[in-house]
Image 1 (cartoon, rainbow, N blue to C red):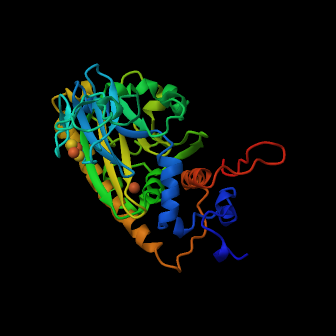
Image 2 (cartoon, protein in one colour):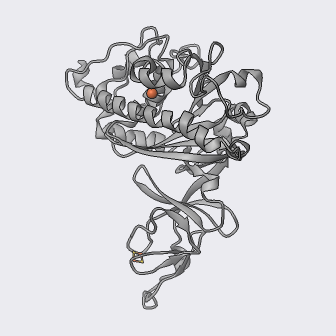
Length: 399
Ligand code: FES
Ligand SMILES: [Fe+2]
Protein backbone atom coordinates (compact mmCIF):
# COMPACT_ATOMS: atom_id res chain seq x y z
CA UNK A 1 0.00 0.00 0.00
CA UNK A 2 1.38 3.38 -0.89
CA UNK A 3 1.38 6.25 1.54
CA UNK A 4 -1.38 7.98 -0.44
CA UNK A 5 -3.62 4.92 -0.02
CA UNK A 6 -3.35 5.02 3.75
CA UNK A 7 -6.07 6.48 5.93
CA UNK A 8 -5.17 9.69 7.70
CA UNK A 9 -5.45 7.60 10.90
CA UNK A 10 -3.03 4.91 9.75
CA UNK A 11 -0.14 4.68 12.29
CA UNK A 12 2.28 3.75 9.46
CA UNK A 13 1.89 7.25 8.17
CA UNK A 14 3.42 8.72 11.33
CA UNK A 15 6.43 6.48 11.83
CA UNK A 16 8.70 9.38 10.92
CA UNK A 17 7.23 11.61 13.63
CA UNK A 18 7.47 8.77 16.14
CA UNK A 19 11.20 8.41 15.52
CA UNK A 20 13.84 9.92 17.86
CA UNK A 21 14.15 13.63 17.27
CA UNK A 22 17.51 13.27 15.53
CA UNK A 23 15.67 11.38 12.78
CA UNK A 24 12.11 12.59 13.16
CA UNK A 25 9.97 14.42 10.62
CA UNK A 26 7.19 16.88 11.49
CA UNK A 27 3.51 15.99 11.34
CA UNK A 28 2.19 15.98 7.78
CA UNK A 29 0.33 19.12 6.65
CA UNK A 30 -3.04 17.40 6.26
CA UNK A 31 -3.46 16.98 10.03
CA UNK A 32 -3.67 20.77 10.23
CA UNK A 33 -6.56 21.00 7.73
CA UNK A 34 -8.55 17.78 7.89
CA UNK A 35 -12.01 18.12 9.48
CA UNK A 36 -11.91 14.40 10.21
CA UNK A 37 -8.62 14.70 12.08
CA UNK A 38 -9.83 17.80 13.93
CA UNK A 39 -13.00 16.01 15.05
CA UNK A 40 -10.84 13.19 16.44
CA UNK A 41 -8.66 15.75 18.27
CA UNK A 42 -11.76 17.23 19.87
CA UNK A 43 -12.96 13.82 21.03
CA UNK A 44 -9.63 12.44 22.22
CA UNK A 45 -7.97 15.60 23.55
CA UNK A 46 -10.31 18.49 24.25
CA UNK A 47 -13.17 16.36 25.57
CA UNK A 48 -10.84 14.29 27.75
CA UNK A 49 -8.31 16.65 29.28
CA UNK A 50 -8.39 19.46 31.83
CA UNK A 51 -8.84 22.82 30.07
CA UNK A 52 -8.21 26.27 31.52
CA UNK A 53 -11.50 28.17 31.68
CA UNK A 54 -10.72 31.32 33.66
CA UNK A 55 -9.08 32.65 36.83
CA UNK A 56 -10.89 32.39 40.14
CA UNK A 57 -10.66 36.13 40.63
CA UNK A 58 -12.80 36.67 37.54
CA UNK A 59 -15.76 35.20 39.44
CA UNK A 60 -15.08 36.16 43.08
CA UNK A 61 -18.69 36.48 44.32
CA UNK A 62 -21.82 34.30 44.22
CA UNK A 63 -23.59 34.89 40.90
CA UNK A 64 -20.44 36.01 39.04
CA UNK A 65 -20.18 34.28 35.68
CA UNK A 66 -18.28 34.12 32.41
CA UNK A 67 -19.60 32.59 29.20
CA UNK A 68 -17.20 30.52 27.14
CA UNK A 69 -17.49 28.40 24.03
CA UNK A 70 -15.07 25.51 24.26
CA UNK A 71 -14.86 23.28 21.19
CA UNK A 72 -18.39 24.34 20.19
CA UNK A 73 -19.85 23.69 23.62
CA UNK A 74 -21.56 26.76 25.13
CA UNK A 75 -20.69 26.87 28.82
CA UNK A 76 -21.19 29.27 31.69
CA UNK A 77 -18.57 29.21 34.44
CA UNK A 78 -20.03 30.65 37.63
CA UNK A 79 -19.85 30.79 41.39
CA UNK A 80 -23.06 29.53 42.99
CA UNK A 81 -24.79 30.71 46.17
CA UNK A 82 -22.51 28.51 48.29
CA UNK A 83 -19.35 29.82 46.64
CA UNK A 84 -18.85 26.63 44.62
CA UNK A 85 -17.47 27.12 41.11
CA UNK A 86 -19.57 25.32 38.50
CA UNK A 87 -19.37 24.81 34.77
CA UNK A 88 -22.90 24.54 33.38
CA UNK A 89 -24.27 24.13 29.90
CA UNK A 90 -25.41 27.50 28.55
CA UNK A 91 -28.06 25.84 26.38
CA UNK A 92 -31.65 26.19 27.64
CA UNK A 93 -33.46 22.92 28.39
CA UNK A 94 -36.60 24.20 26.65
CA UNK A 95 -35.67 24.74 23.02
CA UNK A 96 -31.98 25.33 23.41
CA UNK A 97 -31.49 29.09 23.33
CA UNK A 98 -28.11 30.38 24.44
CA UNK A 99 -28.70 31.43 28.04
CA UNK A 100 -26.10 34.12 28.66
CA UNK A 101 -23.42 36.16 26.97
CA UNK A 102 -20.25 37.90 28.13
CA UNK A 103 -19.67 38.10 31.86
CA UNK A 104 -21.38 39.66 34.86
CA UNK A 105 -23.37 38.80 37.95
CA UNK A 106 -26.79 37.20 38.16
CA UNK A 107 -29.05 35.88 40.91
CA UNK A 108 -30.52 33.27 38.65
CA UNK A 109 -30.14 32.26 35.01
CA UNK A 110 -33.15 33.30 32.96
CA UNK A 111 -33.53 32.31 29.34
CA UNK A 112 -33.99 35.30 27.02
CA UNK A 113 -36.44 33.34 24.83
CA UNK A 114 -39.39 32.17 27.00
CA UNK A 115 -38.06 32.99 30.46
CA UNK A 116 -37.41 29.55 31.88
CA UNK A 117 -35.16 30.11 34.90
CA UNK A 118 -32.42 28.15 36.59
CA UNK A 119 -30.78 28.42 39.99
CA UNK A 120 -27.02 28.92 40.08
CA UNK A 121 -26.53 25.19 40.66
CA UNK A 122 -28.36 24.49 37.39
CA UNK A 123 -31.70 23.43 38.89
CA UNK A 124 -34.68 24.39 36.72
CA UNK A 125 -36.88 26.52 38.97
CA UNK A 126 -39.40 28.37 36.79
CA UNK A 127 -41.17 27.34 33.58
CA UNK A 128 -43.98 29.72 32.57
CA UNK A 129 -47.07 28.19 30.88
CA UNK A 130 -45.92 24.59 31.24
CA UNK A 131 -48.77 23.47 33.59
CA UNK A 132 -50.60 21.58 30.80
CA UNK A 133 -47.56 19.56 29.79
CA UNK A 134 -48.08 15.91 30.77
CA UNK A 135 -45.49 14.24 32.96
CA UNK A 136 -43.31 17.33 33.00
CA UNK A 137 -41.27 17.68 36.16
CA UNK A 138 -38.79 20.55 36.41
CA UNK A 139 -36.54 18.37 38.53
CA UNK A 140 -35.90 16.19 35.48
CA UNK A 141 -34.40 19.04 33.47
CA UNK A 142 -31.49 20.75 35.22
CA UNK A 143 -28.71 22.30 33.17
CA UNK A 144 -26.07 19.66 32.48
CA UNK A 145 -22.71 20.37 34.07
CA UNK A 146 -19.10 19.40 33.49
CA UNK A 147 -16.35 19.11 36.07
CA UNK A 148 -14.72 22.28 37.39
CA UNK A 149 -11.66 22.22 39.70
CA UNK A 150 -9.07 24.80 40.70
CA UNK A 151 -5.32 25.07 41.18
CA UNK A 152 -3.04 28.10 41.51
CA UNK A 153 -5.99 30.44 41.00
CA UNK A 154 -6.85 28.78 37.67
CA UNK A 155 -10.30 27.33 37.04
CA UNK A 156 -10.11 24.23 34.88
CA UNK A 157 -12.99 22.30 33.36
CA UNK A 158 -13.15 18.75 32.06
CA UNK A 159 -15.87 17.24 29.87
CA UNK A 160 -14.85 13.70 30.84
CA UNK A 161 -16.53 12.43 34.03
CA UNK A 162 -13.92 9.63 34.17
CA UNK A 163 -10.85 11.91 34.01
CA UNK A 164 -8.48 11.76 36.95
CA UNK A 165 -8.70 14.70 39.36
CA UNK A 166 -7.02 17.94 38.30
CA UNK A 167 -4.30 17.88 40.95
CA UNK A 168 -3.39 14.33 40.01
CA UNK A 169 -3.23 15.28 36.37
CA UNK A 170 -0.95 18.23 37.15
CA UNK A 171 1.56 15.88 38.77
CA UNK A 172 4.88 17.50 39.67
CA UNK A 173 3.76 20.89 38.44
CA UNK A 174 1.94 21.50 41.73
CA UNK A 175 5.08 21.27 43.85
CA UNK A 176 7.32 22.89 41.28
CA UNK A 177 5.17 26.01 40.98
CA UNK A 178 4.15 26.32 44.64
CA UNK A 179 6.83 28.97 45.48
CA UNK A 180 5.33 31.34 42.92
CA UNK A 181 2.03 31.45 44.85
CA UNK A 182 0.15 31.99 41.61
CA UNK A 183 -3.17 31.82 43.45
CA UNK A 184 -2.25 35.15 45.07
CA UNK A 185 -1.38 36.90 41.82
CA UNK A 186 -3.86 39.14 40.10
CA UNK A 187 -4.70 39.62 36.44
CA UNK A 188 -3.47 42.99 35.25
CA UNK A 189 -3.94 42.73 31.46
CA UNK A 190 -5.63 40.42 28.95
CA UNK A 191 -5.24 40.19 25.19
CA UNK A 192 -7.82 38.62 22.88
CA UNK A 193 -6.79 37.37 19.46
CA UNK A 194 -8.25 35.21 16.73
CA UNK A 195 -5.80 33.54 14.37
CA UNK A 196 -6.46 32.08 10.95
CA UNK A 197 -4.31 29.08 11.86
CA UNK A 198 -4.70 25.59 13.24
CA UNK A 199 -4.39 25.40 17.05
CA UNK A 200 -1.34 23.10 16.83
CA UNK A 201 0.61 25.75 14.95
CA UNK A 202 0.03 28.13 17.84
CA UNK A 203 1.14 25.60 20.45
CA UNK A 204 4.23 24.64 18.45
CA UNK A 205 5.20 28.25 17.92
CA UNK A 206 4.67 29.25 21.52
CA UNK A 207 6.93 26.51 22.94
CA UNK A 208 10.06 26.88 20.83
CA UNK A 209 12.67 29.62 20.82
CA UNK A 210 13.97 28.78 17.35
CA UNK A 211 11.87 31.51 15.74
CA UNK A 212 12.83 34.19 18.23
CA UNK A 213 15.88 35.41 16.38
CA UNK A 214 13.87 35.93 13.20
CA UNK A 215 10.26 36.65 14.06
CA UNK A 216 11.04 38.64 17.20
CA UNK A 217 14.44 40.09 16.32
CA UNK A 218 13.25 43.70 16.47
CA UNK A 219 11.19 43.37 19.63
CA UNK A 220 13.14 40.85 21.64
CA UNK A 221 16.52 42.51 21.54
CA UNK A 222 14.89 45.76 22.55
CA UNK A 223 13.02 44.42 25.51
CA UNK A 224 14.57 41.15 26.66
CA UNK A 225 18.19 40.68 25.65
CA UNK A 226 19.77 37.32 26.28
CA UNK A 227 16.55 35.44 25.77
CA UNK A 228 17.79 33.05 23.11
CA UNK A 229 19.27 30.40 25.30
CA UNK A 230 17.07 27.65 26.55
CA UNK A 231 17.35 24.14 27.89
CA UNK A 232 14.69 21.53 27.46
CA UNK A 233 13.52 19.12 30.12
CA UNK A 234 10.96 16.59 28.95
CA UNK A 235 9.01 15.83 32.03
CA UNK A 236 6.80 13.09 30.63
CA UNK A 237 3.07 13.26 31.11
CA UNK A 238 1.47 15.60 31.77
CA UNK A 239 3.85 18.33 30.68
CA UNK A 240 6.93 19.32 28.84
CA UNK A 241 9.21 21.89 30.28
CA UNK A 242 11.75 24.36 28.95
CA UNK A 243 13.99 26.67 30.92
CA UNK A 244 15.27 29.92 29.51
CA UNK A 245 18.39 30.67 31.46
CA UNK A 246 19.09 34.19 32.61
CA UNK A 247 22.64 33.34 33.61
CA UNK A 248 24.34 35.79 31.24
CA UNK A 249 21.75 38.49 31.00
CA UNK A 250 18.13 38.55 31.89
CA UNK A 251 16.02 35.90 30.26
CA UNK A 252 12.93 36.04 28.19
CA UNK A 253 10.23 38.21 29.73
CA UNK A 254 12.51 39.83 32.30
CA UNK A 255 13.76 43.29 31.27
CA UNK A 256 17.49 43.96 31.28
CA UNK A 257 17.21 46.17 34.34
CA UNK A 258 14.13 44.97 36.16
CA UNK A 259 12.57 47.57 38.39
CA UNK A 260 9.58 45.55 39.54
CA UNK A 261 10.40 43.11 42.35
CA UNK A 262 10.74 39.38 41.96
CA UNK A 263 8.35 37.10 43.82
CA UNK A 264 9.54 36.85 47.43
CA UNK A 265 10.97 33.52 48.51
CA UNK A 266 11.93 32.03 45.15
CA UNK A 267 15.00 29.83 44.95
CA UNK A 268 18.20 31.08 43.30
CA UNK A 269 17.38 28.84 40.35
CA UNK A 270 13.90 30.29 39.96
CA UNK A 271 15.29 33.82 40.27
CA UNK A 272 17.58 33.15 37.30
CA UNK A 273 15.22 31.36 34.98
CA UNK A 274 11.99 31.67 33.07
CA UNK A 275 9.97 28.47 33.01
CA UNK A 276 8.01 27.55 29.89
CA UNK A 277 5.51 24.86 30.64
CA UNK A 278 2.86 23.02 28.69
CA UNK A 279 0.34 21.20 30.74
CA UNK A 280 -1.29 19.43 27.85
CA UNK A 281 -3.18 20.51 25.98
CA UNK A 282 -4.34 23.83 27.20
CA UNK A 283 -2.16 25.57 29.80
CA UNK A 284 0.77 27.34 28.17
CA UNK A 285 2.44 28.92 31.16
CA UNK A 286 5.40 31.32 31.11
CA UNK A 287 6.81 31.93 34.54
CA UNK A 288 9.64 34.42 35.01
CA UNK A 289 10.53 35.46 38.57
CA UNK A 290 8.50 38.66 38.64
CA UNK A 291 5.07 37.52 37.40
CA UNK A 292 3.47 34.92 35.15
CA UNK A 293 1.57 34.91 31.90
CA UNK A 294 -0.39 32.21 30.17
CA UNK A 295 -2.12 31.57 26.89
CA UNK A 296 -5.52 29.98 26.76
CA UNK A 297 -6.66 28.93 23.33
CA UNK A 298 -9.89 27.69 21.87
CA UNK A 299 -9.86 25.84 18.56
CA UNK A 300 -12.72 26.88 16.30
CA UNK A 301 -12.44 24.19 13.66
CA UNK A 302 -9.17 23.20 12.00
CA UNK A 303 -8.42 26.63 10.56
CA UNK A 304 -9.18 29.14 13.32
CA UNK A 305 -7.99 29.57 16.88
CA UNK A 306 -9.15 32.09 19.47
CA UNK A 307 -6.47 32.95 22.01
CA UNK A 308 -6.63 34.81 25.29
CA UNK A 309 -3.32 35.84 26.85
CA UNK A 310 -3.25 36.81 30.51
CA UNK A 311 -0.60 38.65 32.52
CA UNK A 312 -0.61 38.40 36.33
CA UNK A 313 1.51 40.12 38.99
CA UNK A 314 1.70 39.83 42.77
CA UNK A 315 -0.63 42.25 44.55
CA UNK A 316 2.35 43.78 46.37
CA UNK A 317 3.84 44.69 42.99
CA UNK A 318 0.57 46.07 41.68
CA UNK A 319 0.38 48.31 44.75
CA UNK A 320 3.68 50.04 43.92
CA UNK A 321 3.17 53.62 42.70
CA UNK A 322 5.34 53.03 39.66
CA UNK A 323 3.61 49.80 38.67
CA UNK A 324 1.24 51.01 35.96
CA UNK A 325 3.85 53.03 34.11
CA UNK A 326 6.49 50.29 34.40
CA UNK A 327 4.12 47.53 33.34
CA UNK A 328 2.92 49.51 30.36
CA UNK A 329 6.38 50.45 29.17
CA UNK A 330 8.34 47.26 29.82
CA UNK A 331 5.79 44.45 29.78
CA UNK A 332 2.54 45.22 28.00
CA UNK A 333 4.12 46.99 25.05
CA UNK A 334 6.40 44.03 24.42
CA UNK A 335 3.48 41.63 24.69
CA UNK A 336 1.54 43.70 22.15
CA UNK A 337 4.47 43.29 19.77
CA UNK A 338 5.10 39.60 20.46
CA UNK A 339 1.49 38.63 20.04
CA UNK A 340 1.18 40.51 16.75
CA UNK A 341 4.40 38.90 15.51
CA UNK A 342 3.33 35.42 16.60
CA UNK A 343 -0.15 35.83 15.13
CA UNK A 344 1.44 36.88 11.85
CA UNK A 345 3.87 33.98 11.67
CA UNK A 346 1.26 31.38 12.66
CA UNK A 347 -0.96 32.54 9.82
CA UNK A 348 2.03 32.50 7.45
CA UNK A 349 2.76 28.88 8.42
CA UNK A 350 -0.89 27.92 8.03
CA UNK A 351 -0.98 29.38 4.54
CA UNK A 352 2.36 27.80 3.68
CA UNK A 353 1.37 24.23 4.48
CA UNK A 354 -1.98 24.41 2.69
CA UNK A 355 -0.79 23.29 -0.73
CA UNK A 356 -0.35 19.75 -2.02
CA UNK A 357 3.33 20.41 -2.65
CA UNK A 358 3.96 21.20 1.02
CA UNK A 359 6.34 18.60 2.36
CA UNK A 360 8.02 18.93 5.71
CA UNK A 361 11.47 17.54 6.33
CA UNK A 362 13.04 17.51 9.81
CA UNK A 363 13.07 19.05 13.28
CA UNK A 364 16.06 20.84 14.78
CA UNK A 365 17.16 18.53 17.62
CA UNK A 366 18.72 21.51 19.39
CA UNK A 367 15.70 23.77 19.24
CA UNK A 368 12.50 21.84 18.63
CA UNK A 369 12.29 19.13 21.25
CA UNK A 370 9.11 20.65 22.59
CA UNK A 371 7.53 20.61 19.14
CA UNK A 372 8.46 16.98 18.65
CA UNK A 373 7.14 16.06 22.07
CA UNK A 374 3.90 17.90 21.38
CA UNK A 375 3.48 16.22 17.98
CA UNK A 376 3.78 12.84 19.68
CA UNK A 377 1.29 13.89 22.35
CA UNK A 378 -1.21 14.58 19.55
CA UNK A 379 -0.48 11.22 17.93
CA UNK A 380 -0.79 9.41 21.26
CA UNK A 381 -4.30 10.75 21.64
CA UNK A 382 -5.63 10.75 18.11
CA UNK A 383 -4.17 7.35 17.15
CA UNK A 384 -3.73 5.82 20.59
CA UNK A 385 -0.38 5.19 22.31
CA UNK A 386 2.39 3.37 20.54
CA UNK A 387 2.64 -0.38 20.95
CA UNK A 388 4.96 -1.36 23.82
CA UNK A 389 8.38 -2.65 22.87
CA UNK A 390 9.02 -6.43 23.14
CA UNK A 391 10.53 -5.99 26.62
CA UNK A 392 7.27 -4.46 27.79
CA UNK A 393 8.50 -0.90 28.16
CA UNK A 394 6.72 1.96 26.47
CA UNK A 395 8.86 3.25 23.65
CA UNK A 396 10.87 6.34 24.55
CA UNK A 397 11.48 7.45 21.02
CA UNK A 398 11.04 11.11 21.77
CA UNK A 399 12.55 11.54 25.20
S1 FES B 1 -35.60 28.25 24.75
FE1 FES B 1 -35.28 28.90 26.78
S2 FES B 1 -37.22 29.29 27.58
FE2 FES B 1 -37.59 28.68 25.55
FE1 LIG C 1 6.99 33.94 19.36
